[in-house]
Amino acid sequence: MHCSRHLLPAVLFASALAVALPGQNPPPNAQWLWGHWTAGAAAENRPAEEHCYLRKHLQLAAAPAEASVRVTADNHFRLYANGRLAGEGHDWGNAGEIDLAPFLHAGLNVLAVDVWNDGGPAGVLLFGGVELVDGRRVPLASDASWLSARQSGGGDAWTHLRFPAADWKPAQALGAFGTGPWTAVTFAARQDFEVPPGFVVREVASGFGSLVALGLDADGNPLASVEGSGVRRLEDRDGDGRFETVTTLTDELKNVQGLCVAYGTIWLVGHGPEGQGLYALQDDGSVVLHGLITPGGGEHSAHAVVPGPDGRLYVTLGNHCYFDQASSPASPFRIHYEGHLLPRMLDPRGHANHVVAPGGTVHAYDPRPGVPAELRWESFAGGFRNTYDIAFDAHGSLFAYDSDMEWDI
Image 1 (cartoon, rainbow, N blue to C red):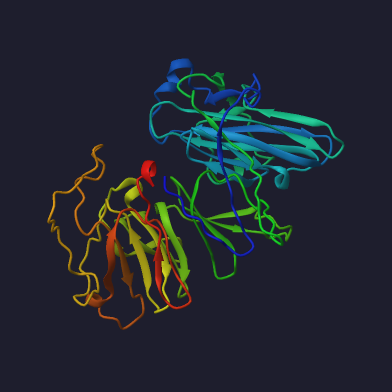
Image 2 (cartoon, rainbow, N blue to C red; image 1 turned 90 degrees about the vertical axis):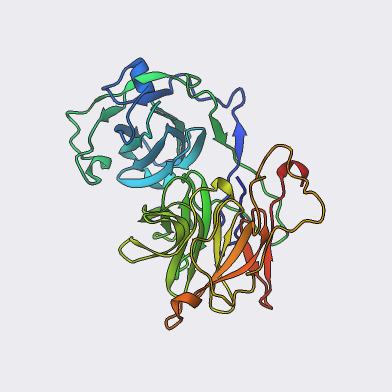
């Protein structure tokens, strides 16, 4: 994946992947789990959209000083602690780390996990621990002591401590870490950062899986697009410097690689109910399409959307997708063709050999009232390979970084 880096005031998210090394593996008692209604090979062929709900009580003799778990699921999970969303993930190959300390307290706690499957193998693995203020440590691991159910009963009551789970049954343990088909799990590794004098780096949120786009709303709250899922708003309601409250703004859009707030609206580029395109988020969580982009393209598809100095929005596309509606006849980039004096030297591996002009493009959209529909979109620039992000300088000049083939950059 080609990554973008966004510098945001007062918030920085950072993550890295490291292959599991000896000594970093989960404890032996950490088991892959699924619901009590499965056994052995039955968990290797579960239907798409099947949910497994899991609960576990956690008694703490003192307040937690630190608490974290690593969780991965085939294919998706959301982890709750005492009724609050603590983290989520959508890639079984990455056991992301989730900070539980803000959600736990001395006494009885409850952890709850909603896991769902895309079809085929299904399972969830969790391990970590709590360090109490008195130095004692309480281990955490997924095992057959967790209770499971097919249905949650509706709402979020099942994530709370006092939920009556008398009819829930012990989960089915499918095998320890390393059990097939989950043999290539990586762990999110902490990294040290070298920063200039006067700068510091600190983690202010975690446990979201893979984040592909970031922004700030009108109140300065971070907005995050989660790969394979929707868009979340993060809030620091208790003022402790960590964004502990997570609100889902929309799940109607997936693979949102472009996100910005401009002209009083949250603009998103991703796969929505009408296909891939530029969408405006409404207050009720629904989305309205403003420009259609051809489907497909994988990582060479639709990317960033940024506000320009001229009051328009600028959308960048990789070279495996195309803008799918008419542009203004006055577009500055409207003449392009395949003209070659000498034979082309195509990629010998065959990558993108079918792509012809204009390749990757940048398009401008004018959302202001009164602009005729046929003039709202302009084809602004082209000839790129797979520009992920763009930016304007103080003079209004547009800058783009075009990714080369990674092996010959």
